[in-house]
Length: 56
Image 1 (spheres, helix red, strand yellow):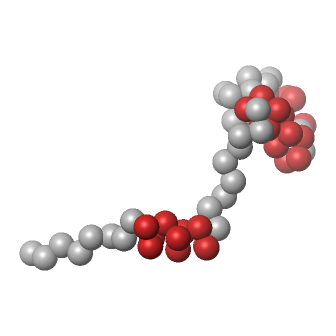
Image 2 (tube, rainbow, N blue to C red):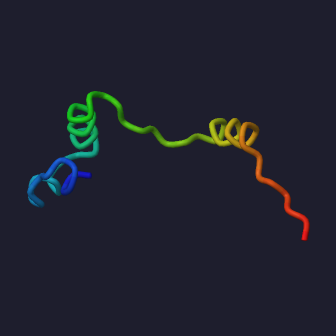
Image 3 (cartoon, rainbow, N blue to C red):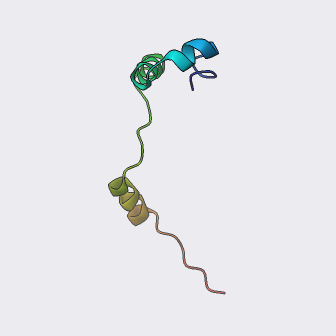
């Protein structure tokens, strides 16, 4: 993300904190940054889209 999406030089990328990187990505993307999928979200997706059991 830092080197490709933000096009930061390596020295700037490696000197950033995680919070600084998050802020840069959020600013560039207009605040639309994907959040990690939590267990509850996974369970909800499994209910909506159950795996099909195939016979045979």
